[in-house]
Each structure stands twice: as structure tokens, then as C-alpha cells.
Length: 137
Image (cartoon, rainbow, N blue to C red; front, side, top):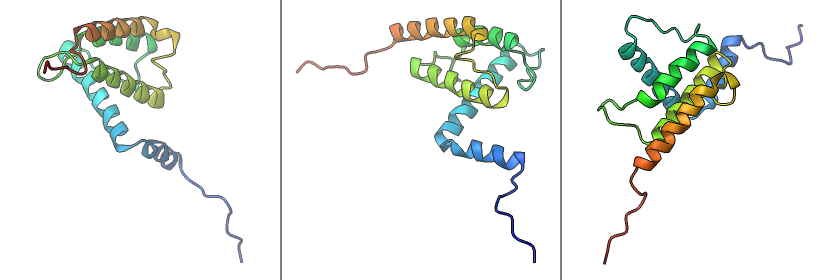
């Protein structure tokens, strides 16, 4: 009688599924939304250039993000709030870190896009309304 193996034999696909399932539903949704926003931007701004994010180089991605961050808009055409833009940035970070091994926040190859992102966040913060409004009584 054969002794059962002590260790499981998970495929790479099953292991990848474990990692993706580790994120909460909200995190998965935020990552998907961030990527779809970037894809929509590319489709509208560069309709003749097909963006294959599975093959994009760090240099190309950096240039794309330099253009994306200040020009990203909601579907209604309005600016994203600082928190929404930050959520998009972190969603893209999760996607590119998992799929390509690119750390778009800490890698020096993305210094220019990070500087643009920070400038846009400061601008949105200056444009924003106060978090709470005190009414005169």
C-alpha cells in the first residue's frame, strides 16, 4: 500500500489564485477599476496605439503614467479627488507589481511619473473643499 504524500501538489495557476484571492473584494475591485481607467485613457488618447500591458517596458509605462495622472478624469469629465486618484495609483501598483514585477511607486525608473503624481495630488488638495463645514449657529 502506497503511503500518501505529506505535501500537496498545487499548480502554478492554483498558487497564483491563492495570492489573488488573498485580497479583499474591495481591493480586487479597486485594482480592476484602476486598470480599466488606464485602459480607457489609452483607448481615447492613443486609439492607434494598442497598449499591451503584459509587454510594456518600464520606460513606456513611466511615460504613459506621466501623461495619465494629470489628464485622468471621471466618466462625467470632472477631476478625480485626491483620494480617488491615490486609489487608482495604488491599484495600478498592485496590478503591475503582480503581473510584471514593476514597483511603480518605489522603483527609480518611475521617478518622473511619481513626481507628476505628487504634483497632481497637491493641486487637487488645494482645489478641494474642507472635509467638514462648520455652520454658524
